[in-house]
Image (cartoon, rainbow, N blue to C red; front, side, top):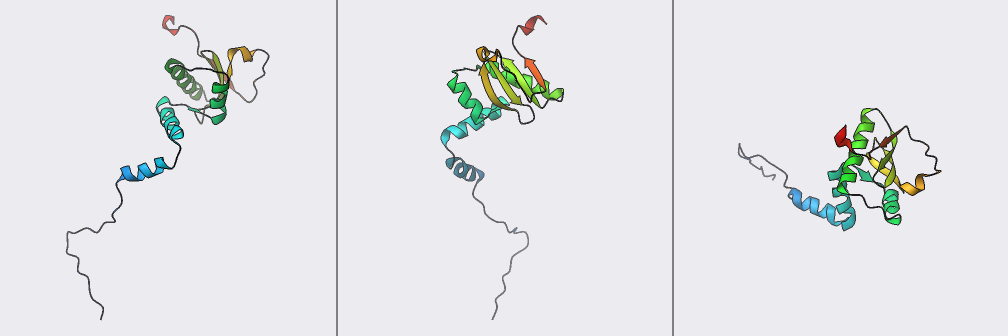
Length: 135
């Protein structure tokens, strides 16, 4: 004999799921700590750095300040407003090739390396140095 199950009205049936914090914690635990931190910092900055760009920053001992990062974000915003796709951004002591669409710094050079180099596959250049308070 098959028994019937009676569900009273007003009692919604729902699937139980673990709280979101537990699910997010499991995802974060699977990634290396430095990768998680880097992703969170990049979200706040509005710009990402490719693995190649991070290696170049480290190898060339280029330090970017919070102000430099803000100017990079501003340069990307300006380039995007003009329809640029790939830009050369000059900020601080560095020159960066940036994918505007992906908001990603692709590679980094210091200012001394600029001399004699030819940059290809870019459609714009943004110079973010100088005192803009007088403009």
